[in-house]
Image (cartoon, rainbow, N blue to C red):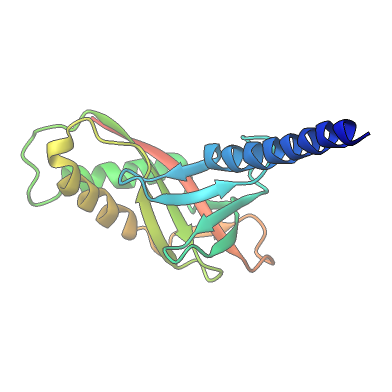
Length: 167
C-alpha cells in the first residue's frame, strides 16, 4: 500500500508540475516584445489571433486591459500617406531609402492620448536603428488627436498595431 501511495504521489506531483510549467511557457509565447526585447503586451487567450485578452505591460510590470477598436480617422491608407509625407518631406531626408517594413504598436489611454509607441519589428540596418526608431516614433506622435473609436462608450486603454513600408 505504501508503494502505491508513493507512485500516486509522484504521479500527482509530476502532473501538477507539468501543467504549471506548460502554462508559464505558454504565456511567454504570447508576449510581444519590442526591438529592444522589452515586453509590450501579452495575449492570455488560447486563440493567438484573438484580441479580447490583450494586456499592455507597463514598465513597472502592471497589466492594463486593452481594446483594439481604435482606428485612424481617415483610414489606414491615409495613415500610411501621412507617414510617407512626413518621411519624404523631413529636413534631413537624403534620398537614401530604408526599404523596410516597420511593425509598431501605439498604446492609448482612455482619453485617446498616446501613452506609448513601440517598434515591434527590427530594422534591417541595425546601425541606423536608433535614428530610425526616433524618426518613426516622432512620426507616429504627430498622429495624436487623429484617432477615433468604433464604440465611444467604452472607457478603457486601446492599442493600434500596424505596419508601414518605407521605400
